[in-house]
Amino acid sequence: MTNVVPHLLTRKCLTGWWLRALLCWLPALALAQAHPPLEVTRLADSPVSLTEHFAILEDPAGTLGLDDVVSPQAGGAAFTTGQAPAWSLNFGLTPSAYWLRLKLKNGGTEPFDGMLEFTYPRLATSVQVYAPKSDGTYSVVNTGYAQPFASRPYAHHFYVFPLAMPAHAEQTLYFRFQSDVNLEIPARLWAREAFHRYERVDYVSQALYFGMVIAMMGYNLLLFLALRSVRYLLYVCFGVSTALSVAAINGLAIEYLWGNSPYWINISASVGYAMSLAVGIVFMRSMVDTRTLVPRLDVALKVAVGMQLAMAAGVAMSYSTFIKPQLVIAGATSLLVLLTGVWCAVKRDRSALYFSAAFTVMALGAVANSLRALGVLPTTLFSTYGIQIGSAIEMVLLAFALADRYNAIRLEKEDAQREALKAQQLLVDNLQSTERQLEIRVSERTEELKQLNLKLASLSETDSLTGLANRRRFDDVLNAEWRRALRLGQPLAVGLLDVDWFKKYNDHYGHLAGDDCLKHIATVLGATVCRTGDLAARYGGEEFAFIAPGIDGEQALKLAEKVCAALAASAWPHASSAFGYVTASVGVACVVPADTSSPLALVKAADDALYQAKAQGRNRAVLHRQS
Image (tube, rainbow, N blue to C red; front, side, top):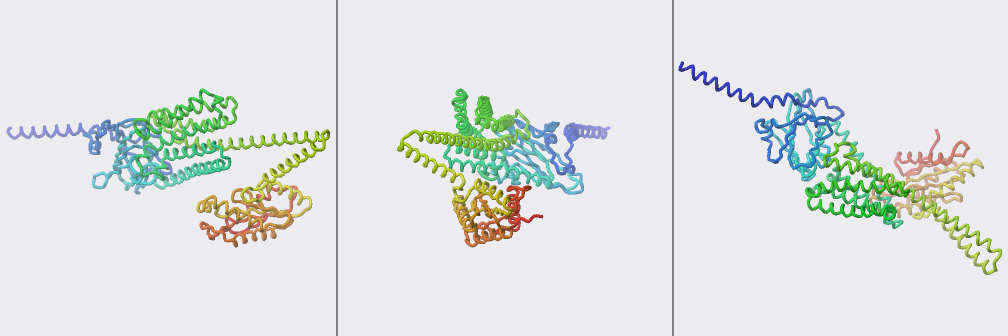
């Protein structure tokens, strides 16, 4: 009996210990069974959204460490699962830190090489990624938008983390996020090759957008310099501020412009957005006569400009204090601008029609972006990229608005000319009943008007930079020569000349030097194409053209080769050219006109030959030969 009691007591203690251990581990075991690991072998060309695969632990005090969340007794069992499939986790504006746990399994026979992508450039102020090592410890990557761009393990405008797993392996990753703005976590897991294909398309799309912005802003800046109209300068400022804001929102500015300034990374998107709204409103008031059409809304627009400038200054001073009011005010301002544009359009203002159509998509995108940042709307393609999509559409529509403005100026000029002709006819009628002195004075006035009209006609047909015929003159002469050659049964040749690597020339020497280069090319072309009846013209940009009546294709080709040789012989320096000096490619086409063809077809043939000259190495002339 004496030996049995201790034995029973020992068994009882051991049984109690195992029961307590089992009770302690049962929640973790149940959680693991309810939340199986993500099988990475099913990844192919498409990513997997990780929202439903995350386990979530909120840390309101922000004091938990890795050991606290890994250990089931210390809090690991407090992770929650069961999120519905979605684009992202959106916790809104919250001071809490959040831990995410992700279990992965590689059941295949090959190692897994993948990329974990968080598709939000302003992911969190502080981001820690804990990955297990072979010795049982965890490696940590510490990054976030409060850290320099160099802290990211992979250079990308989003947050991307390379991930490697051996065959037949499981691992658990832990993530800690804390943000002083909206905490949104859109996460996807890619196979590496599929990610790189997607990455190339993504960056090309961004390049197309910003390339269009640069082209439109450069065009409007040239209009401002030519016409001295403040409206064009305001549009350039609006476009630049919008583009910088978009670049900050999608992370490209962080990657390429100010990635080493955490303070500016934090505030750049909000400050840029506020400034673009302020400048956009000023531009709208200049383009649409809101002071007359909607005086009350015009006062509200002035107040909105002041509020946007105040919000930009406030966010720069205290981001956490002003970010939420700034988002609300930005959304309200966008709605105000949209309402003003639509109301002015209802009142039949032509500029307002274009402006309201241009701003509608951008305003809706801005509102959607603000509501997404506040956690009201889910993260979708439009709520994330709405501003960028809207600004691209806006620039295209405003280009139409500028074209409409030029058309209105042309119509006004035609009306003025008709009025001048009526006045001239009235003077002629009055000559019959006036004295000789009045007749002389009217004749002098008539001669002045004639000279002015001749001067205007000359200016309208001459390129102001090179002194050659312009595109309009070229088209008129080509049509006239076509009819003449058709009547006489004679050949007609056309050549198109394009300066090789001219963009690189401008980038290297500057636009003023580019203008001098174009003048030089015009001089060479005019001196070479000099027969009676020939015409040398500036076709547009760095393209020139010539018309040579009465010669066949081989003679036209020799003429084009003579132009290339003369230009090369002038040895105008071009450091970015493969030849070291300015050269040109020429496409030549020749045809005996017939009723079944047209001048446009002849120009198209010359253009095709020009592309052949480019493809064959440039600095040459190619004759279009019919197949």
